[in-house]
Length: 182
Image (cartoon, rainbow, N blue to C red):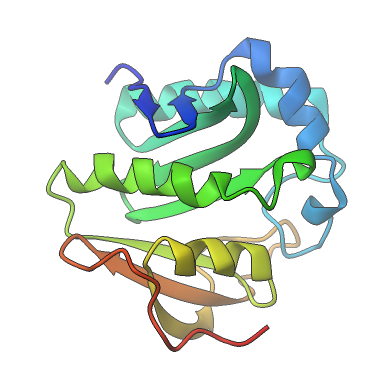
């Protein structure tokens, strides 16, 4: 499949390109990506970003993973991706752009696109304690399903405990009760 561009009220979501490599490298060297339970390499090298862009293109071609760069006023500010096999969503945002509601907006656009393809549900997980990711999932309408061993392999080779959630295609996108308290 060729990459699909999506638009929301403030954002353009499109496939990351080689022109994004330096910003991806910069953003992924933020301390928020440092912890051992993260999946991104640390320190994050330019070649890691080159590999990420290449893998993103391969994911689109194979229809196995759809990755979008989140763009505000033409500038890359983060990423959001959906994996077809796991039917899960992941995201991150550059430090200078956090706190503006951009990721919930981007996630909503991707969820609209995914659910238009008759996908019954989308899952989400993050390392226990990742409050910003939890806030996005809650705002996007996910239902909190508890703490379980994570599906992803962390940088340290473990499968850490994760907060998990699900959003069904038929669910309201309104925030649901039952989330852990900060």
